[in-house]
Length: 379
Image 1 (cartoon, rainbow, N blue to C red):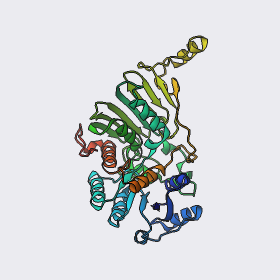
Image 2: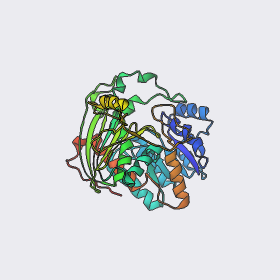
Image 3: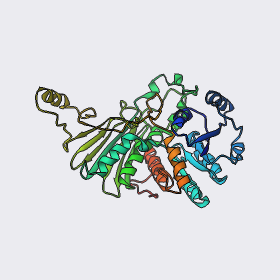
Image 4: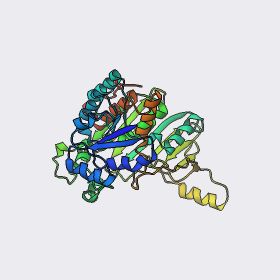
């Protein structure tokens, strides 16, 4: 399928890095409203530049547009693409407001098109291995999940020097204005909704802990940098998801069932180590001196990601970025293209994408919504 990229910033390099994993996708060209960003990106990747979005959408060969613009532009760009008859794969979130996200999904349905949303990490080997452990009864009946998306105090790091593969600067001002929950909650919300189905009730709290991020932005221009959301799924499972820019980096997931506990070490690693422990959260190593030593090391450590029986994760030859985000970013667009070709329901699309977007928006700005919140969307 012929694709085009709109938005040539930091994240766009993650997609082009993983494009070779999917020979069924062909990049026709790129556009960015910042012509210098487009030139830098296109020169590095050898891509054609479209000077305007209208020019890009006038090319009849383009079937699917990857909307990798900043979140504030997601709605307008995706709407233009859908109105021109193009399928859309959007970076998260679908839009900055629930009503806008609802409009995009409705518009796609009216036009017989597909709109899907990142992240596609749920399609990775670690997530699918966890899904199989749930489905085959290894954990018994799953009752609870703890998901962490703590990215530490990145605003105290030398982020001004961070550059993508093609040289794009890390968009600090935009990241801090959008908020870490809208940027990061989707990584585990997609997993949790894929595992347990739609959320029927959400209770969230969010706060702005560090209003000065060193960017010169006024406090009112900075979004909340901490949130905790408690989710009750229609299936009966409950989960707690925390996102923040304060606590030490932690991207783990712990799934608690009646027969065992499964821990994912890092949700940003498609082949993250997975560990299985007994229902009490203990590892049952072999007897003997080694077993006693390991049990002593285990004792008193609440975050025991590195203890337990290692669960085999399938090998993958997929190229991934050489960064903390070790995921096949182009796997989502590729699966969307396959579903469009086959006439099947694509993952991460339509009502599912809307549901994850709604949950993310409410968790990011919990003070705007009455709690407990009952989502308008479902899937």
